[in-house]
Length: 84
Image 1: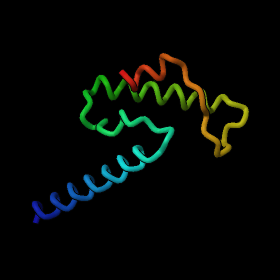
Image 2: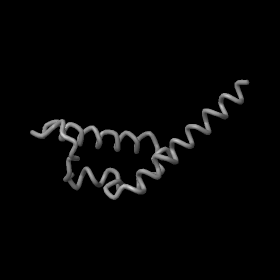
Image 3: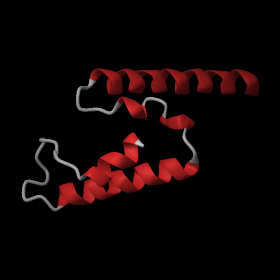
């Protein structure tokens, strides 16, 4: 029984991951380098997380915070973290 539950959970997780990969791939502004993010080391994941936290803080500081428009423009340092 445990094997069946675990197998179903693994299949569901894989399906969700594939859906997310397709959304990343299909979105022009998304970075395709994030498609295999689950394969990165903890250190690499921490760098990307830090970068996104910095972008979120920057977005909250914008006068139009709360609107649906995405915050654009990132520093070269921010972009380099994901593209490295």
